Length: 563
Image 1 (cartoon, rainbow, N blue to C red):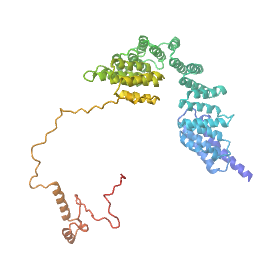
Image 2: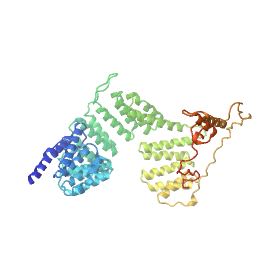
Image 3: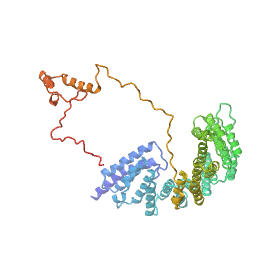
Image 4: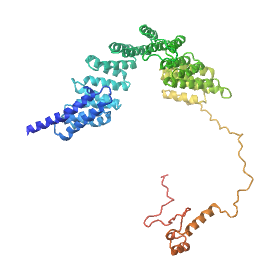
């Protein structure tokens, strides 16, 4: 008997589970799971692995490989992009296989399935459970790495950087080391640790195999300096790289630059952006125009043209010229993302310019609205709250004691509190609105803002605005009642009511197919009897006025809406 059990277990492994493992690792290239999705043959390998896993569960349900096969099935579902089914299978793995040694591993793949399903909170919890259950396990570095990715998606950047750092500190030569380094660099950049992020990107760039990869990580270094607003250091780094980058060959009329020769242009573009962010308008536009000359009629030229318009809009505050420059983007490269963005920004600027040039009775309101639009553009589109406050202040100074000025003061207070964390200054402006703008919507809004911040506003200071009476259009003249008598029916024609009655009589008198002479006589004698076709509707169809026996007639007076 012992021999038979051993033989069955051996068959379960070598004939089925061995093949299930073989196809799974063939799909993942020997890794515990696919770090990067490779479409194609891997889908077939996952399907074969699932088939063999199911075979173990079906034909060898008493073997010791059942828990392995069940977990293998769940892992394959992750590879087949069905993480929710994996979650369903592995949620109760510990209770389903209480004696299995694979419970920690099942917890890891449960966390992986949660992360792939974008359920990042449960994913972090599952990875934490795995890390508390094991001290030594091949999946430990993968758990820290995937935990970092989940935390990154939850915008918990400090914890994400720390989790990725665990891989670098404990397994510096692991397969995941470079990935963990990139992960930590991105987390540090989002966290605001620009120096640490730049150092990580520099290290990655030194390890890069291709020149394109090295250049991409160099540009991420530039991003770190730009985010830190170290524009002079950014310019020095870019110019040093430009000195080692060959410029593009001159382009003949109608000829496009060679593929992959845009590095010089990308560096020149970033030089212009550094000047623009530092407030040096002329230098920025000059650098962008160099790109137009070196790379005419290309995608990078369209971006350069777009940034010229952006410079006129954000730094020079010349909306008319900015609109003209935006209109030139499509001439560089036809339809592209920058073409669409340029059109959108040009439309917005055109509306602001139109409001600024408003005339007539409502010109004051339209010009004030232009100020609000300009401020909101700086606040929400350009992420420059300081410039937004300046625009709101301009509305207050140009249109004092108006409803627009009160709105502008409230908007200033909102920016100070929400964007610049200056609550005291915000409260001061709101109290100013309370005292200087009575009987306006702005005063009511200021009171609500103050009370929301925990202040008490005396009711005696509040004057509610008087609603305006609707304007009656006295110029509109109603159509007079005609003096002619109502339409008379021509003799020989029937009224609508008489027409319906006549139709019903004709229907009763009209012989039906299969009628006998006696039936026709009975229909004429008893026109209302339903047995002989009486009581018909307007179309001549029989109507039975008597309800079927056993069913009470409907009570049409009863209310059913519970009111």
